[in-house]
Amino acid sequence: MKEILLSVIIPTYNVEKYLPACLDSLKEQDFQSYEVICIDDGSTDKTVGILESYAKDWEKLNFHSQPHKGPGAARNLGLARARGKYVLFLDSDDEFSDSGVLSCIASEMEAGQLDLLNFGAKVEFADEELKKSRYREEQRYKERESAGLYPTGRELLHELLKREAFLGSACLLSLRKAYVEEVGLKFPSLCHSEDEVFCLRAFLGAGRSKHTGQRLYLRRVRQESLTTRPDDIEAFRERLKAVWLLQETVDTLGSAPWLENYLAKYMQDVGRRFAGLPSEEQAKAESFSIWEAGFFRLMQLCAKFFTRAQAAYIFPWHLFKKGERVVIYGAGNVGKDFARQLQEYDYVKLAGAVDRTGPKASIPGVEVRYPRDLQTMDYDALLLSVQDKKLADSIKADLQKLGIDEAKIRWDGPHYLQKDFYEDYYFPKISERK
Image (cartoon, one colour):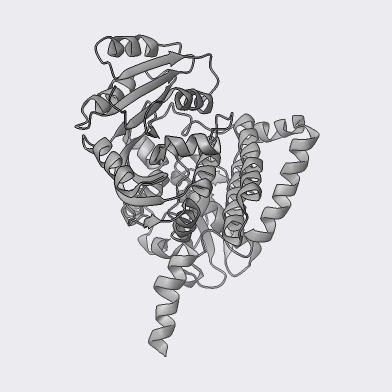
């Protein structure tokens, strides 16, 4: 039998609405040396029936069923059954971006004799409301310049982290199957954050590795998916386990200051997620085991050492006069960083926060209200905590419809990241003065 070059592994769980489009994006590929392995993870809707229908007249499709264990376990079963020289992952509510994707991936893997190929993704939102509430997804998957070929995955990972271009998504990887088997690469038994752990292990153990900025993957952002579902204490609990596994991975495969920095930022993000949980969910942390509670406390203490030294997003102090009362628009990671900095320093006063989701959003120590409440709030300036200019312009237009004075609205998105602020703005200004 002719060698199969690519094995595409797809975990499925209650995706009857999206699965046909996912499978059709594979059937339309102009590359033929591939197989599709679908692992159904205990679906209760029409997902299995759709798989049976496709399998009848499509010989490339093999599917297997297992009791509901989560996407990590489903992918592990897919890896065990894969016959291809290379493996890659596709989520059942996503697609490949065009008919030439598999051909491109196979060509890159073969030509470079790669252990690992990392590529980019486009984002498509299920509706406009979701696009507004999940606007950070567009920034996360924005087009990036190719980093190129590196002798090891570790060196490539270092470069991507320096560029702030690393995305911990298994769906953006193609891996040599023999490499996966050699190092025993598997997904942890988690429903949240399993990708980050798998990807870190994949990069740190790989030989020849390459990053291309080509956006080969099409990520669909929909309301019912795991990634858009509101967090609860169990999701946080799994992310806590992921922190432990990430640290264990780094300790095993060789620590370095840049890796510890990555872990510190990850810990901060996990801590922010806990702070963003409703109070009734936070209260459930009392049921943590002694080990979980102790590790969480240690993680909080460690993360604090990094927080003051390097906020992920730097507050644009240059936009304000001393003593101004500032309202923050947006309760995402940018808004949380801004609020924390304002609470630490008294140059300007934090007068409140607003977000499109209102009180559903959370910033520690601040009441989050709806944008319409700005009409009755007392403040001097309103800071938009979003980086994308197109989104900022859209928010400004909405605010003006509410009657908000344009002179009060402040925004400097391109300089919110410290690296961008200093390299693209501050240092050039100093050079000009010299």
